[in-house]
Length: 135
Ligand SMILES: [Zn+2]
Image 1: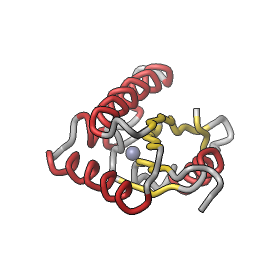
Image 2: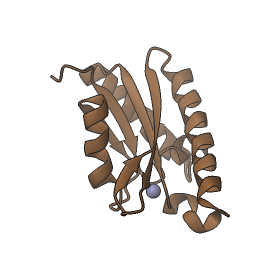
Image 3: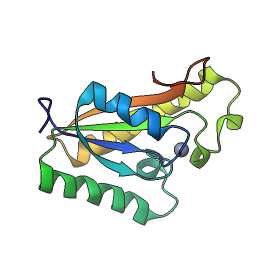
Image 4: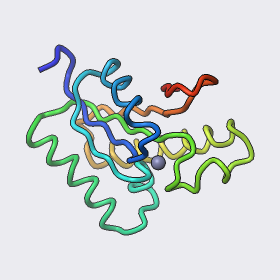
């Protein structure tokens, strides 16, 4: 076990982001169980199928039962295809603002289902050098 409490991380499947983002999240929060679904928070707010939301919530329950995590970190990322990508937005600022709203909605849904859990949000982006960053 890490010195830090165990977490659950909810993350999109996108190969352009998770390989660099997950180590950053691990450095910040310590060990975690990982739930990866295309669109991440979209599965809670506007899932393509009701089963997608059910599967995500079931995976949280399984993690709680098996490993007793204390925190849930819900992430979204820039240019997420499940949300139609960056082209859906007029600007980077508009895209970030939209995803911050989605993350807050997802946080509220998780908190209502799992009131004992501390829920945090992270937005995954890239800097000018193309490096993955948490903002
Ligand atoms: Zn994505």
